[in-house]
Picture 1 (cartoon, helix red, strand yellow):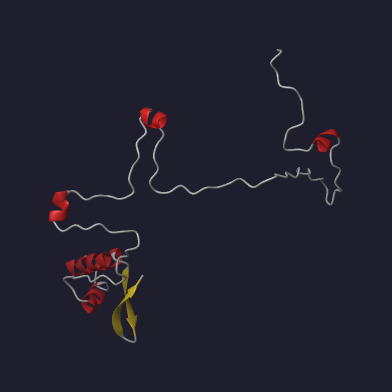
Picture 2: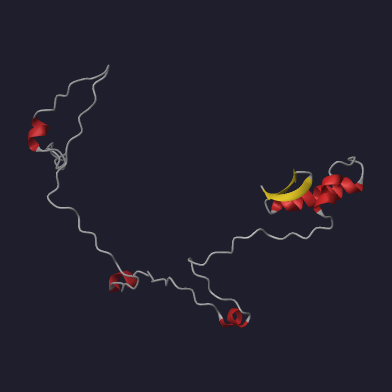
Length: 149
């Protein structure tokens, strides 16, 4: 029992605040607890570490290894024509082209057929393929056009 901590004031609250609690005026039905103001003599120093850091010997002996940020492609992939793409490279923004067995007018007519006909189900399948690439068919001024969903 002799190794218990003493009840000394914490370093967060100033000694005067630990001796006498702050009184605050209640502005509502319940009083709010006053938070202690922490004053630090200096802001912590933040240093930026470069990409290449040498590990101390005790860390390296524990089994920690450095991992490089760059990826080296194996020779077979380079022979196939695969190139590394950086995070700055973006895919071209274009509407994908979809080749279907029916044109847009045939799909629109097929969607109005009976459920018992194969024509309707082929039109439904084509419509599903269009929706998978975020396209829909719309009628604009009597014409069927593809629009982004």
